[in-house]
Amino acid sequence: MPTGDIAPAQALVLTANAAKRVAWLIEQEGDKDLMLRVSVSGGGCSGFQYGFSFDKAVNDDDRTFERDGVVAVIDETSLELLAGAEVDFVEDLGGSSFQIRNPNATSSCGCGSSFAI
Image 1 (cartoon, helix red, strand yellow):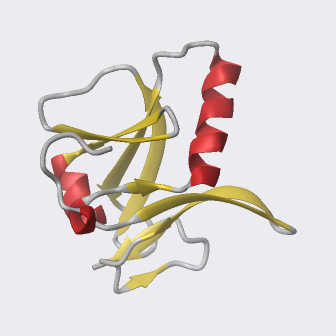
Image 2: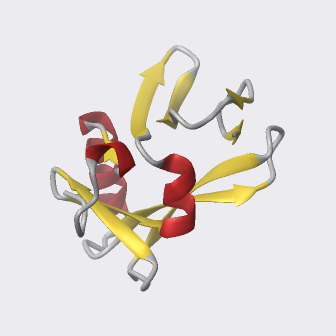
């Protein structure tokens, strides 16, 4: 669940597949206090790029979202660009990866790791 009173359209959603994969990765790291940090930074072939990392800290400008015991952390600036987005983990013949379905993106690159607004 999101912290505070964030409407679903403003939330960041982890799918069940994403939560399951993050839980497995945290288990591999051996530190149950880790959270998935999702971020947006300038760069990439489309203008902005997505970032994923593990973090133990929640900063003053962060919002947290929970799914199946996994916590995702995102700063308010990144959340403005990702409001209503869904983080998924996909496995197919081409490999496996985290993917973001961002309703705010007007275009994205072929690999899906960057986007434009």
